Image 1: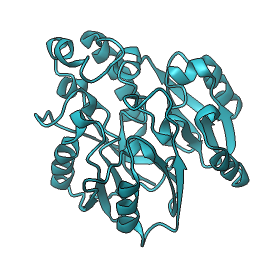
Image 2 (image 1 turned 135 degrees about the vertical axis):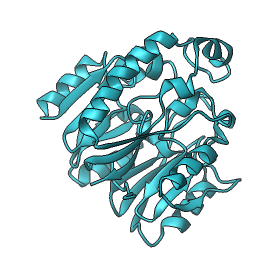
Image 3 (image 1 turned 135 degrees about the horizontal axis):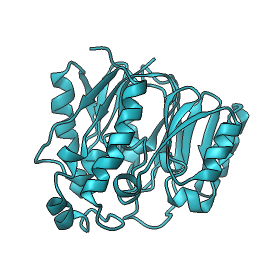
Image 4 (image 1 turned 180 degrees about the horizontal axis):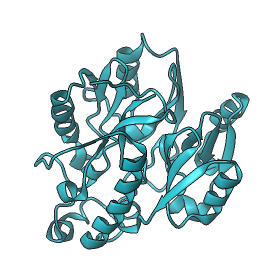
Length: 291
């Protein structure tokens, strides 16, 4: 199978999802486990299914090949957020044993499935290294920014560099703030989402000055997300192709700014499946191939 995704905005040709029926499983399972996963309230399973149907329809209308992870006992609620356990490079997938203990075996299930459909493994970040997909942001095919925070540590970054040294020319290491604490999921992609090759939605309050200046020097237009919409995942968008994105419904200011900038926006209701687990449209997907 064709694979390789060293871009945040190239047209998605194939993508990996996990349906809530295989991740959340049932209302009973949600009732029992949402607190240990530190969700913002227990999701309503029926509403999750309704929200996902809309989200899935948008994806299928724009992506030719959609793959689904099966249910697996090694995974929990967060496995609906398929983006975090790996990155797919043009040389194969790199898997991450994530910092959140409840997700530490998730990469094993993803690896097993992707190898079964023909995506080879380039490597695995080994303990004491830590890394999560939300901290790895492709600037272009040869340039990657990596958030160094509670979920991704120096040893994880060192191993990632070693695995990719012959396909990446430049690594930008971005120190992440403490934010709301160790238990909160603050990734680099929590504060920046590319929506086109030269446009990105950002939450500058949590962005180091050097990185913001570096982006501006590259000619990137920074579209600012306000505090309220940041809290509702307004800075977490999925680019389906350059200038065409998915955004959670309920962020009118950032939606208008994007539309004024010429970006086409599709929206979905996501309170139950996205907001409660702090996983926006990027988190819900793992692009396997971008053109």
